[in-house]
Image (tube, rainbow, N blue to C red; front, side, top):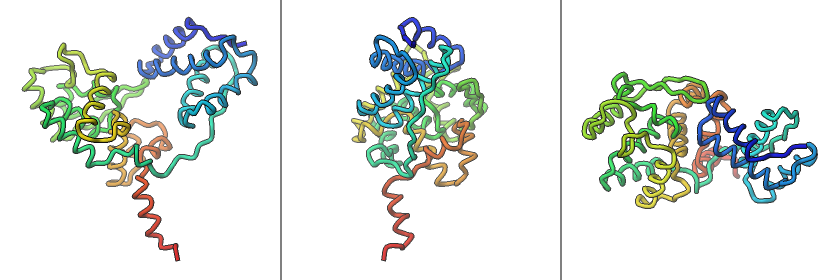
Length: 278
């Protein structure tokens, strides 16, 4: 019998924090477990009953990728609880192209950066460029410090793994000039008025407002989509997926393949070049 309580979720969250999961990931997993609590408020007697949760999520309209993400959280919790139950993931073939309403184009990215500058928000303009030019996760932005600008390198720690990224000279100079104007002499470059590093919530809200001002579809504009644009641009230029995986900090090239998906327009163009339609 599996019964999940709020106390169980708190203990699970604490175990994830000890394993250096990000606060955002921990919050997301806790939310996923509460979906399971809502599904079976009186508990789950056996694995057969648990399998119904997967169908329940699909029936509620969750996308396959979202279902698998939720199942991943549940499987982690089951292992934490000492149960040998596991839910199988939905088998999904990754699309070779991006939906048009999710693909952030290079022109739209440029328009966002220029719009931020025109509105007098240099910090936001540089933040957009830094996330995109370095392919960073939003949680990794705090690694861009005054000290890293001096060396031209930033060391990033994510889930217990360390990687070093290079900061292009042009970007380092822009950021150093900005810091000089703002009186930032050490620590994180992107900070609030009180000097604390910008967090995920701050950045998300800033980007959504910028999307509206730049007339870019809101659903295209979120921090991770700038990382996707970096990956597609890098792969289109160098065609080296192994190197790209290292830069992005991916353990599996299969993950990197998702990031390098072309636009639907480009996919159609290439299919047309095969000249197989008589």
